Image (tube, rainbow, N blue to C red; front, side, top):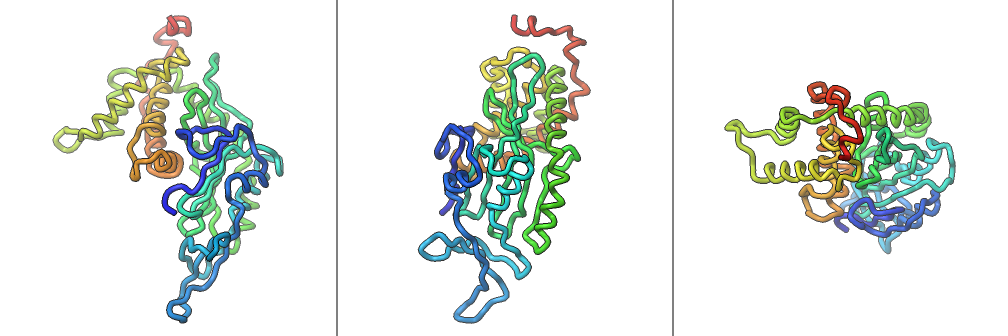
Length: 331
């Protein structure tokens, strides 16, 4: 049961993976359609009839209980349905049809879901829209807490980016311990600030869309993303990755939104497109790339790129200083 067990989505942002259903789901339907409607139990482990100082978490919908992971005595089972129920509470529409995507990885060890916030960020004066979602993920093998975060999906190209909360944290976590219920209740006050996060993200991408990349700042960003060795050399792989990002930057998503061409926002999109659709990953499949892009090394790379670009924008000229208008860009 290696790799991804199942992916079900309203549409396929990730290379036509799994079943594309064309609609949003409520909590009961997402559990069934996403093949997530199964129970979990924790039991002591034995070896040759002798009980061991460890416990197993078992998936119970198979002919035989399927071991998901080994945990300690203090580990509390939290069913992944509770994560979806918590998203309902946060969105303020219990049992509403707002679930866009759900899936499972590695035999059900990792579960995730995306709920539509029904809010969007937009580059002013354009149809460049980024839809915002609440992402929930957890693991049943003891490796991951319940993790809630804000996630963006740019409509033009379906590129994804996890967004920091307004307090600057990447996510809010609830661990599998006895006080988890109180922790989740406390989390509600924090996570209601997602609307502020959307506003902050909207301001940030509009700020990037007003700054134009120069030769020097482009080199600075790429040097920090793909640093040379002590002799000033780069691997062939790094050179190829840089070429891909530069091609994406030049293409500007087929110039779908001409006004952002050459901007720091254009550069961020070039990087996220590279990670979501081109970057090589362990395993090599589109499923592996999707997992890395949202939950693993690809997500880390995109966040690093965002931070580097934000560090560099002060050295980039503004649209006003260059006297660049939408009409000039489209011409």
